[in-house]
Length: 135
Figure 1 (spheres, rainbow, N blue to C red):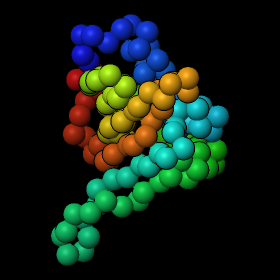
Figure 2 (cartoon, one colour):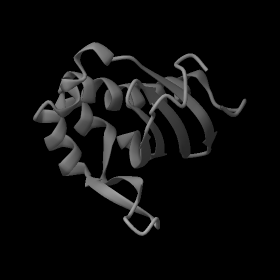
Figure 3 (cartoon, rainbow, N blue to C red):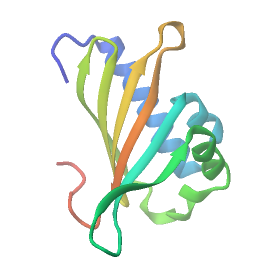
Figure 4 (cartoon, one colour):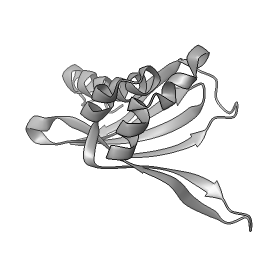
């Protein structure tokens, strides 16, 4: 995180990241909706049968809210462990890494005036044991 980021900014960014993570794992669609910008998109990398890499499994804001409401994240009953780390803040944009038992998510946030910080983009992959929590 950049040294010029105020404690208030860091707290606001962290609150949005926690709404995203905790909203997902508790099935709280209201918290998920509060965290996401209307233009939100979430995607991952996949390899097709020919070995080519592409982005796939895209989710819109409405799709993420629906999956959250349906309890998709609550199926990880014993693994509701997550950590969020603010990686960088520059003026009105920020990057946060969210580690959970299942995923590594890179959240891109932007500050929208009175609406505050919102997640605009998420790029994720399955962890498959690549990171230990606490690193």
